[in-house]
Length: 88
Picture (cartoon, rainbow, N blue to C red):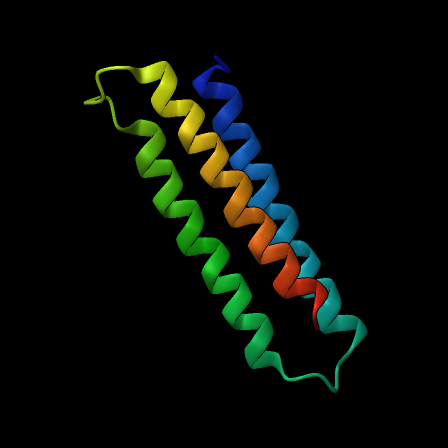
């Protein structure tokens, strides 16, 4: 099982990188619709908030298995956000 500290760090880096990439795209393409970038950034922030709540949830019986599921969910959501970013 990965430590909670590493999982939180991964979450922070992944969502931060997605937000940074969105803003870089916006600066590189000033004629592009900024609303789509804002939607991706908002979704990344909401995802971050949801995932941090799940990571901090200590009420789970099998914490190790639960955190593995949270890690998989993080990967899936990050992949979805990256795909949205790549379609711009």
